[in-house]
Length: 134
Image 1 (cartoon, rainbow, N blue to C red):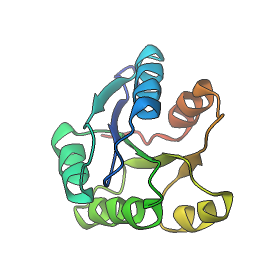
Image 2: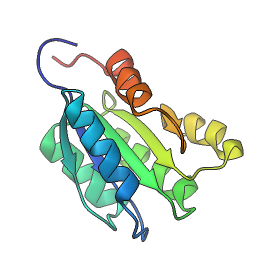
Image 3: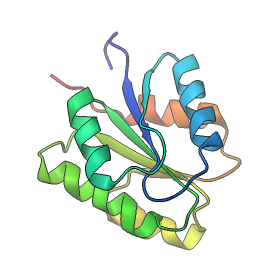
Image 4: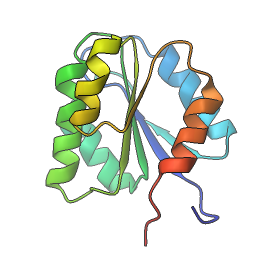
């Protein structure tokens, strides 16, 4: 990617009320030189997609601890594609069972980071996979 900062939207879809992990990730990505926008708790997929479009982000980072990731993450992917935002990298994280990860990737979530993932692994993944936008 060029010298412009990578813009990342960190979002908490659904009714999950815990955001400590999302805040830690947001700070780590900011410390890694990215511009981070945090949407706050209890966002709908529609709100997340609208914020991502409005903020012209390169990456959406979805965080879920509630177990609703199999519905909410693919819905954000669908809404972004529906709006023609196919160039936005969508990643997820949280307490997500290993057996759910292949289905999330099939649904369009590029990567899923589970507890214990080094924070630098997330920023390295983003840098390696974010799409150049013209």
